[in-house]
Amino acid sequence: MHNSMISTNYWSFYVPIYFNIIIKIFSKYVFYLRDMIRYGASRKTQSDQEIKSMSEQLTEIIVNEVVQIYLPSTNIKRTVEWYKNVFGFQVIWEQESAANLKLKHGPFLFIKKTSIKQPVQFEADEEVSPVVSFQTSDLNLLHEKLKSEKYQVGEINQHGEGINGSYKDFYITDPDGNLIEVSSYPDLNLEQFRGY
Image (cartoon, rainbow, N blue to C red; front, side):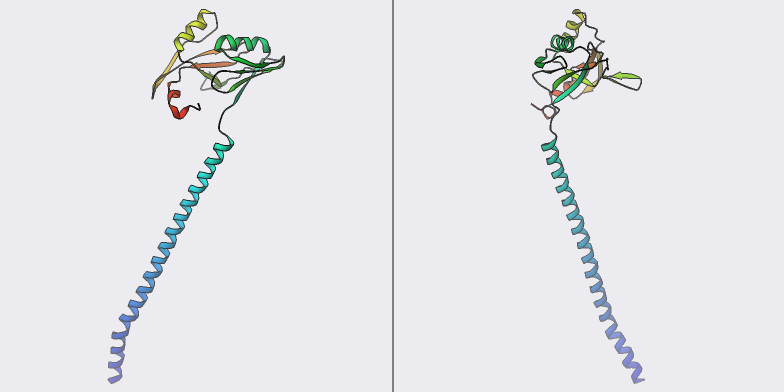
């Protein structure tokens, strides 16, 4: 009887103590794991941001501007005259096999001689699309001017509503069949889209 009372007293006294100790240890372990996971996630996010930032900086340093567009031509002299007359390009230099032209803004236009016509354009959704697009400050005026000078120009198209108004364009082909888009491109008036 006495031993039974001791055993009962022992368990009734020590079991809650042991239980509380176990609970405290378990709680500390859970909190420790939680903090480690949070720290790891925080470090991963920070590391990802650092890598992204470095990548953006490298991209800005390594690749930051389109400097030249290449177009084929079977007759350099004829093509140079065409781009001077139609778009007002200045000749940087000209040879029999190639020429380099420039507008006030934008990339150089490099004309390279080819033995046969190889028009630069592509087809998508059953439509022929240009690779090169020039912006004009007065689309209607330029369109009328080119038509009056007997250049083969397409009709003016209007597409939706941009931030600064609708997008309008027309197509024209150079002497070698390179399809050129001429556009008003109003969204280029936004400073963040201009490189100058």
